[in-house]
Image (tube, rainbow, N blue to C red):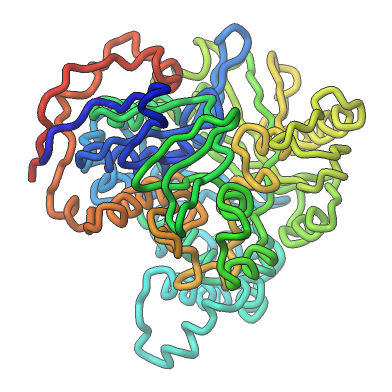
Length: 565
């Protein structure tokens, strides 16, 4: 492997900086791609508009740093030995630095609908057994429904009438459940966790929901020790330890195209940076419509963008309580539905209405991490309560989006609506934690407008383009593009959304840039990072501080990198 070159500099005489690769966006996908490129000898610059790297895996602190909250790291699948997460991290020598904690093997997520409490287990067989125990009168329909979903998700080929069974994969999940004669309650339990991708069941292909269930059922759910910020901190460390640079508060205004090829980027304020390769891990729709521009799009891509739908945005409430919920054996993860009409709630939100009764995902970091020291002091707990709400600016009384400089934080109608939805979320959370309001010592909410402000995503979407059939499988955007030198990373690519998928996909994008199958190389044992070059982790290591480049990551002594197998 070639010696890593020092970071480039620019002067009025030499002109713009020149890098081997510029990565736009420091979410988990962009950072993983940058880390693999840097570890393979490329001079890499990562540009992040926010002041902290990590995208939706970042955290924030409140009450004088007393409480810490995860923005989007709630639970992740396929993180055990042999899983995709361990594969992606192993090539960067990060498996011991980013540790994944298995969540309640007996049932990682508690589902609550009126009259039924269900624990989501590991394994399809156990899942079916628990469904039958909950709804014994529906055994035949449940067996049929689970058999179809399992066959599709696991990629199995049934022995009898294979195409008759597999064709269910392209139909809506609600169509399958209705054909199986399932009650509204049974359907609600099967659909309860679909807030993890915020899309209406009647528009969700069975293959999508089955694959989502399989992601957790095959090996359980996990949470990173120390909170979501450890992901961005350690990926940033790899980039910078191998001669790259990560810049925050650096918003890209344009991807520069010359003679049909991507040659760099231009930042707000006019600074231009040149590169042989540009990787956009930014929002898919904005990458093309704003950063690249219509004049460089194909006719087919223009048509796709015109009709492109994004997943619904989140409304989140962050709460601290003056009680340690671990002492109550409160589940670390739960989805609470105040009624059994899952599809009905989505229809209301799609019509730009927010019903009085809101479903809520409840995540308790202090219960997920045995040490529990990163999120709250002893005797306290933190909660992240997530739901979803309309994205329309009109609903929030906003005329211009925050990404375009629009002001909204002091608008009376916006604040009133935000408070109303906060109380609705707390109403639902009370179904699992009855004294949540009495024990609450801190409460703050974020809206889809907040999400758009910090992540610059279309409509504040957390999960990228909608999981419609036309956006899945072979129809999903590839990481390579029609513009030479321009590649994509992130949740709207062929590798799908979610923390696991975007990290694994970042490795795939780096492989496409390098013209190599990095996934196969890592599976064969390749490790591209010499761990001795990384920052030493001491007892006072702060992932959040380390995720603000220049403040905590040291400049290590440059030694020749090596690859081991």
